[in-house]
Length: 97
Ligand code: FES
Figure 1: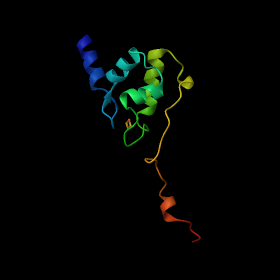
Figure 2 (figure 1 turned 90 degrees about the vertical axis):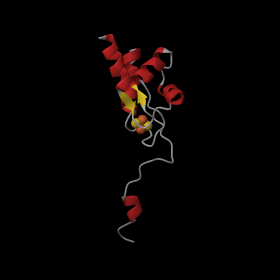
Figure 3 (figure 1 turned 135 degrees about the vertical axis):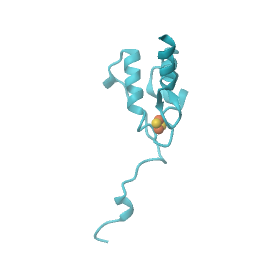
């Protein structure tokens, strides 16, 4: 049973862009990395093409559960250019032009 749980943790991918599993994150937290920005730097989680839009909330939830910190007290990581979503209307210009 323990091996099944371990296999699930290894196979549960949290950050698809960077191929980081639940086990990778939990191991990092167990090693003392308990801040979202530290996790980002240590595992490169949230540094893929989606810039953490897919995995960011999951990481906060895992951190909250593992550390017992209320989720609303954890800060999200910073989103940095150049990969930022741009609304299509920005390319279409103003209707009055
Ligand atoms: S899923 Fe984590 S950076 Fe995209």
